[in-house]
Length: 266
Ligand code: HL5
Ligand code: SIN
Ligand code: MN
Image (cartoon, rainbow, N blue to C red; front, side):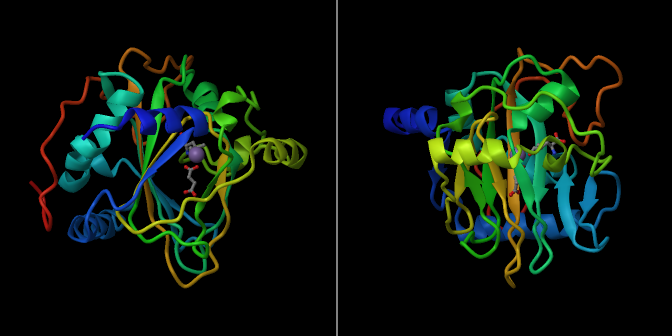
């Protein structure tokens, strides 16, 4: 699996690139089932919505479930990620933002690299996010919204808010861009929300401005995000590192795996 020069250019230009239906329905069904099981496992890696019921996010499933362990090595994800960043990559972070029907809250406007600089003292944005749609994403179920090209505007915030929305991870609320900034940024870059079938994949830059609205639809929107980091760019936390479920400890280069076997673990 290789990105074409045109796809590489579009990623550099826009800060994101969508590949429609990269995984087929049987593969998505297997991943979806794996998520259903893993989302039952309680612990600090599982973040709940404010109502204490809906699951907001589940971290590090690739360390508990063979399906997700295989997925992060899949040539369809790791191949393009290597082209975009470096030959030697490891999983910096793995999460599934679950956004349940009727109750999935917003993800505030932010840049990921702001969080990772502040919280993990990461030197460079030598990384790529790979988002995989576990459900169909429509205009109704709280799609991700990007400001195309905004990854070239540098870091737009340098401190975390005093209050922390969560102790389990750094919620984008804590590094949210302000309305005045967003007005100017949207004026400059516009907004795009890539919709698509379950199984579609979006590669996006750690510095692109993004966020998403609450989900008031009857359709859930589970978005899996694997973040690959250059092995030569490990975090250098000043004090205690953040928990292993948010910041991967295994910084050895990932080997390319085989393709997923639909319907089950390999
Ligand atoms: N929740 C992530 C973390 O590292 C940061 C956010 O979307 C990524 C901003 O704790
Ligand atoms: C979302 O799930 O819509 C937000 C993704 C992110 O910022 O991690
Ligand atoms: Mn983000």
